Length: 444
Image 1 (tube, helix red, strand yellow):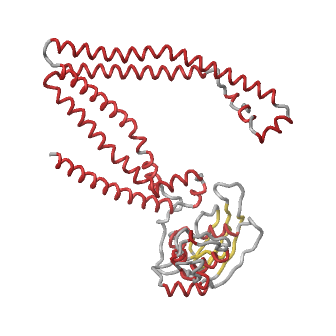
Image 2 (cartoon, rainbow, N blue to C red; image 1 turned 90 degrees about the vertical axis):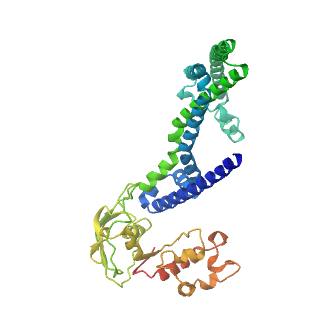
Image 3 (tube, rainbow, N blue to C red; image 1 turned 60 degrees about the vertical axis):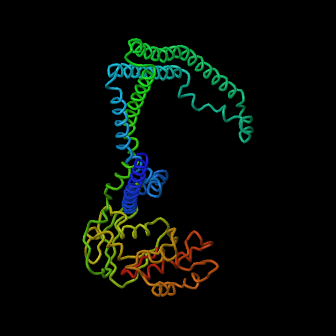
């Protein structure tokens, strides 16, 4: 029997672990995909702490959160089974006594809860009138720091700080006195409830022992079973109350997965051919959603296919904003942008962005390998020869062949590369653009 139980436990744990791994992997992939496809404006509204929490959930917290949620029904089932089993074992001999014992335990539990509420109420009353919001800015606790000594002495603040410190001590002493008084009143009540529960149990069981209905050993077993049932019922209540909190992280992941970006990457038409590259800006006005002030006012120009255009102006005049609007990272406030005679809002955003490649002045490289940074955005899986040709055209192949700086060549990870310059990053991005071979090249 023990061998069968052990084998069943091993089988159950393996199946459970496999199910958790599959579920967590699917959720991690879906969450990564959903968050990576959110519009830039959504990212700008997220604080650094929010982004860090999402990143941790995607990387390593998801299996733990899935495990917590999947354990909820299993824990409930185990607790209910334990309660039913303990009650069934004593039902035939003394079911009425068992109910009395459970009732005594629950009365004691509720009484302790009531005392706990009274203690919390006493603590709030003790704080009232002692710690006022106007006293939160007391500076005495910062006065005894070396870097502030000259400041306080020059401003003659020592006497004032001493007064504030004395007032804080008086407040704390008053709070302690009130809490000690409340504890002296509540402690006897706790002892009364605890001892009263024990006396009630012995009194109830003692009558059955005197009548010969149960033996001493059975009486102790009965008390243990009653305590077990009460603990399991209390734990079941706590599990039920905390179930929502256990699901909070997965609920957040669900919201992130199901929330639709304002610029839906799956909506719009996908022409079967590449665009010709005819760009037209018609009276474009734009204001960033989370910033004040209009960035672009009535921008209009026409750029036929195969032409090169240079946009110049002082810093902050909106040059980079034009590229962001063209790639539909943002929507124009008024006006329209046309590609091959059609509004870019009618195209699928992902198809639209595949028609362009951007090389910025200060490019960022993803923390993967050099090869990954070059081939991102390429169609299919480029061969080593194609990558080499693109790198030679960008004048970066000889640098990448330096084994001292790039010991694994294209497979060198970015974190292993030291002292890579901005110009070298730009050339890697140029090689990426050459390899992608889009109809439109944007040089920021």
